[in-house]
Length: 401
Image (cartoon, rainbow, N blue to C red; front, side, top):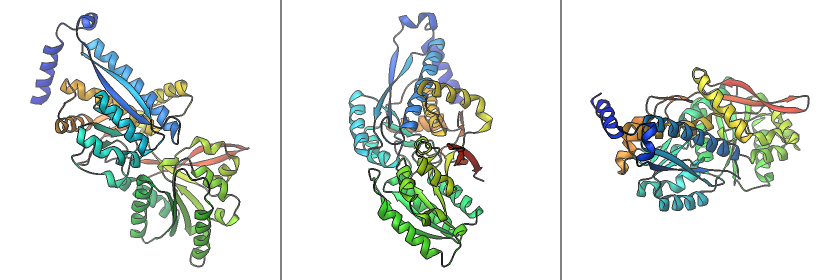
């Protein structure tokens, strides 16, 4: 309370005589924000909607600061990483050279892992809206994350499969930190509950031929069929946009569609799948669904108009990931307002951001960060594909417990 009173009093002193009609005569400092998102590669739907969300938040904060006589303005510069860790590193070099100390993104854990040591060494605060890998749950570093981590996600996914009566899972995964980490966490939860897990192979995000990994999945289905019914077997693919290609190629083998298939957060409500009839019908036939961070009904009056605004601007449907980016920018604004600065010292910057984020009520609900700087709460929605007279659409099928 003493700290709050102190900063409030200090703000009054600093901004006295610099009301809205007088700001032009005061020196305004621009705070640079860097966005690391996929604009033209995989998950570009999340990337583009997240950038739009950040800009909306910046416009709101800048307007508020102007009306209150606060002598700071935010400015966004975005970098297209295409989910490529090497491109993320190049972007960080440019960000560091520009003097920017606040970064929103990147989207994937593999990118975040690539830039982490860079951010730590230079005191650049990096907050990802979507990374979940347990390997990045590290205390006292410059990395924060606003999506629930893999421990929460894997528990939700595992329980949903158990509720369906699944006793054996065949897993395939994109060979990156986030996808393999999710596979490991999910396998741990499922086997601890008495299930059987078989790893059937990995692939790269640039791969276009999945015949080898699909042949292994088929072999494992046939092997497991001697012990389990098809209703007790499931296939989980932890992957991104390439899932559409996987389904397209899997559709030609009838064995592969005899069991249910499931996805991870990287393929949640993917729009490209709806435009590929062969892949989409495979998803329908296998009752495929994937999880996504759930937006709370209690904050619908906040996120619903924001998503509508973003859709009107980009033509792309946003999701909880989009709102996580919005909330990160909102917390940056709160931090600057609370502390009247972006702390230059790395430790002070960590502490200020953690304090500003904890108990912040945003579009994604009440935010609570754990000791690793990761979101420690969250519920997941499960969405699957439906065929409505030849038109495919995503539909809600359930929610985590």
